[in-house]
Image 1: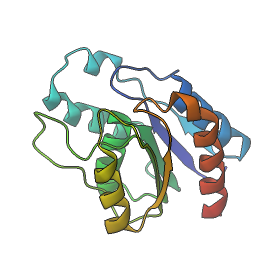
Image 2: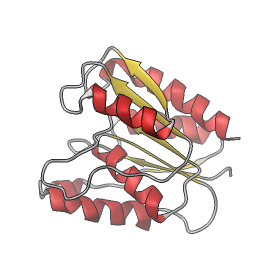
Image 3: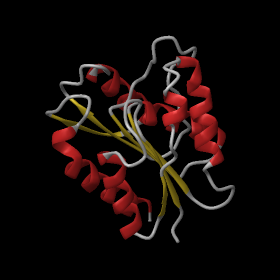
Image 4: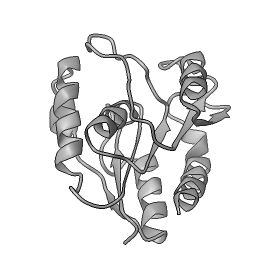
Length: 170
């Protein structure tokens, strides 16, 4: 086993969502263990303060030893960054990354680790300029695609980029 990939779904999604499921298949094929925490009970609160409970769940599902990659979409990307501040990460793979969540007390933060971001030019929820600024400031690999926040037309592309990302960590 090369390590563990923790894949976090978005706010209006679930652990079997299309994007995190596609990323999990890639991880499994490449010899990584994939874990997809379920946040549906937390998300049902619709309370931004519940983000801390999401971060705690990410960490509760993260092994104490071995390499870990945190990844996720939207809110899942947001909590992945904070998890990397608590547990050393071999890398971060972030989709449709929000840098702020209205009502939450912290702006997005992440540890220094190899990072890739896939973001839609037409993201109606998380402005693309913020993703570009984050990528520039953190030296992240940034993939911008002609899509909206859901990245629904680019699930295969996201999986391909994740494949390249994981191979690049070896």
